[in-house]
Length: 254
Image: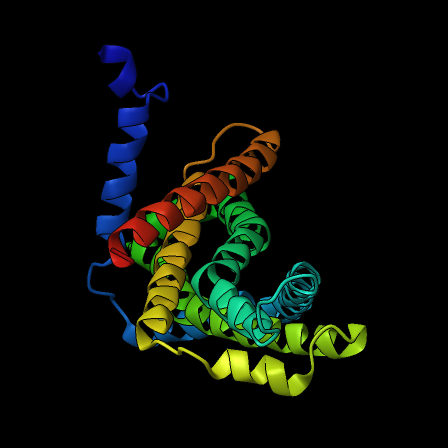
């Protein structure tokens, strides 16, 4: 049992240190305006900086989903407006939050881990601690807040873009008309599905940011450790996003 909690890197040690880090992030800030400015900066980095790649990937995912499903329906008796319905439900419930989460795990997660890892190895974090700054709430807290706000917005953009991509693909391929597609999009609209999407996005944003910040904040050793911290951040964030996706789908859709 000792090897699982020893500081050499046992799983229980990392889980405990991760929980303590999260707890310290939500302590009262010394200067609110300083934290507010940092949160705004992180919202730009996480949100605005990720819009283009989210738009591109979501558009083509919606287009491919529409084209493939329409192709399968072309030889059946199922009405073609079901293409719009399937694309809408797929994007809202699964593709938009999960694919966006995986994209952000790679883009944002690696950036956060690298940023904090560099600050740790260049002793900037140590200097802030000597000055009496709560480095957890100042360096990690604004990143968590920004991700919790911006990731759901990015996921909504991804879902809308994917649905539009499916519409355009149906028109270009000739498989489904825009009228049939929009009939399917508007059919059986459930507010619960939107709520599930937003909950998933919020949880994914927290997971990606907290794991990436943990890996970067506790990086140690040589400059090579920054690369290792970034890799661990991306891999662990991606795995935990998929695990959380299953758990949330199981809990929220029953």
